[in-house]
Length: 115
Image (cartoon, rainbow, N blue to C red):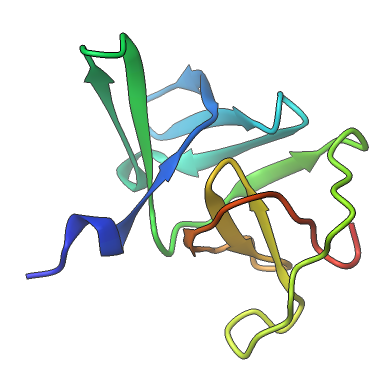
């Protein structure tokens, strides 16, 4: 059995819209907006801290990705075999540049080399 923490990444942004087929999310102080398919998203309530837990499935694609010019971290992501165009990190979520595939969690913020 696969560990939940290997299949899902805790996303620390906010929910903009939920429909039966997709969820629209905002990150990096609303400088990044995107949607994911509904099956690749889980939300739960944290009653102790009166907040929400948002999880994205590793392997999901960030669709309709809109990155404003306000998201300008000085660091750029490294290129890897899995992500030949580099990676980006925001709100605890690391994704490949180009494909926008979520590959895991991360700490800090960085952008794709061509963003």
